[in-house]
Image (cartoon, rainbow, N blue to C red; front, side, top):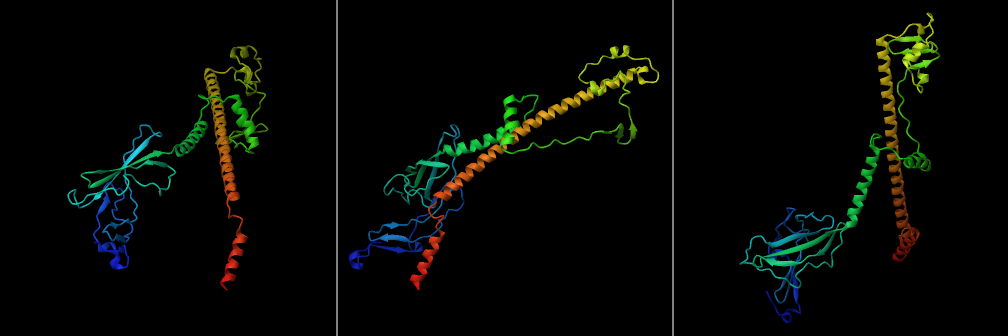
Length: 336
């Protein structure tokens, strides 16, 4: 298809519909999308020498094997194989027009991957073209992701710390339990109160047993009093100091079963005391994690607010709404 431009009004090229000429069925072999057709069938440009140019717009999606040996300091190579779907190497030959690499002048940089190079080569007797796209992972994206995960792990680690393994240092208690709550206007959550036995004016009420009165002064010497927990009690010493008064309980010594019951009650009391201390120290660690989380929330709000204000005050057309209205009015006046 050639012609002399002198005989046709100096017309050197024409544009025809793609269905009027033969088009090679060049597709991406390692396609990951499933759609092998171009998105728009544009016209074909034909010059007077018989050369045809057909550049349809298309988006190609492919898959490649990722080597994670040196991640994140790695460089990946993805191969794109283009060729004819129906013609073999004896029926079609592919050639490079100018350069043997991908033109990256119109490439829009990515925020995750950086394209280093994209050389090409002819394979299978010039019936296919392979593009070796070399990409490199941007470390800034990886660092931001690592910081987010690291902060989350630190907060969870502090929240679930146990006093049996991690003892809270004095500076941590001073900083996070005294100073930081005051600075950030935080109040510690109140602990859940347990159902205690109601005691009022010598009257005790127990579920299922009704009410009864008691006398704190009539305390058996063999049973350690709650008021004397800090003093060591010795049963044999108490027995020698008992006054033989038949009108009081001191006259009647405790039986072996009662003494075993007293020991069991002391063991249960000590266990409950240790359990309360354990929960108290555990709640301290949880409160420290809450303080750190709130502090990071304030830092996030500060960075977000600072960035937003910086963008608003540096944008050239944010505070020019009145000038825009004046321009529209002037345009209407010119039109009328």
